[in-house]
Length: 109
Length: 111
Image (cartoon, rainbow over all chains, first blue to last red; front, side, top):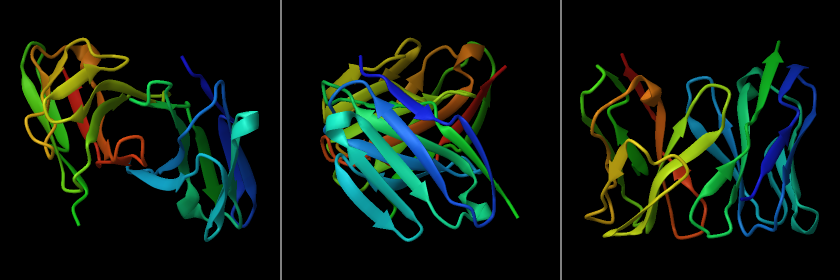
C-alpha cells in the first residue's frame, strides 16, 4: 500500500523562527491533507491540498503531486504552534487516509 | 455548527467489558470512519462506511464492530475489551474522497 514519510520527526524552534516540514508519499494521490494535533489532542485541519500552493496566515503548503511530496511552511513560529503535524493521503481505493508518523514541533519563548 | 461529535471523551473499562463509542455528524457526509491513535504512531483506520447500510474493514479491525443505520451516526462497539485496545479513538467524516473532518477524540483505558 501507499507509504507516507514525514521529516524531520522532531523539531525544536525559538519563537519567531521559520520552519519547513516535509511529507513524501510513495504513489500518486488525489487527496492530501495536513493536520495539527495540539497538546490537548485535537486534530485541526490545516490544508486540503492535493496539488498546488495554499496559504493561511503564517502557514502555507505546497504539494508537487508529480514528484510525490508536500511541504508545510510555518513562518514566525509561536508557542501555540507546538504540537504534532501530520500529513495524510488517500489510499488507492479512495477509502481511507493513510497517515505519516508526524513531526513533533516544540516552540519555546 | 457541531461538526463531528464523539461521546464519551473518556472511559475506563475492565478487561472483558463491552462498550460503544458514539459518533454523530451533522454535515450530511457520506463517508465516516474510525481511527485509533497509539503513542508514537500516526492514526490507523479501524472501520469505515461509505453510506448508510455499508461498512468495511480498515487496517486494524479485529475486536471492533460497527454499523451505519443512518447517515448521521456511526457507532464503534468493543464486544470484549482487551488492554491492547487502550488508545485514543477518533471518528471522522467527509464527502466521499473529500476533506476529512475529525471529532475531538475518545480516550479509552482498558485495565
